[in-house]
Image 1 (spheres, rainbow, N blue to C red):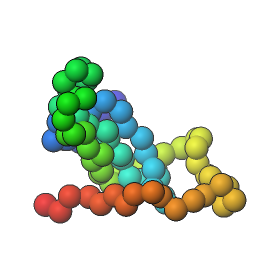
Image 2 (cartoon, helix red, strand yellow):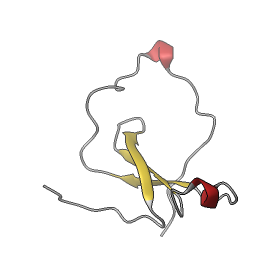
Image 3 (spheres, one colour):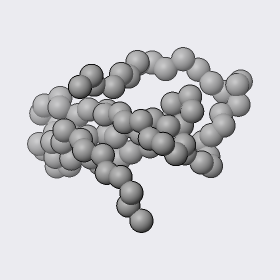
Length: 79
């Protein structure tokens, strides 16, 4: 049953729930999935949305000894 949809600015090719409470949906988007098209421009994005129900199962919880600081910081787009 689909209860909610999330709009992205371009086609979405992968997604994953994450964040400290696993309520952040990370959507990997790009203008195309054709390698010849996307390899010449840098238009891929990681878009984020907050969700009501957290993710379950692996990879959560990550043991404290395996956690590390992210290499990049992600922010949601202000409306």
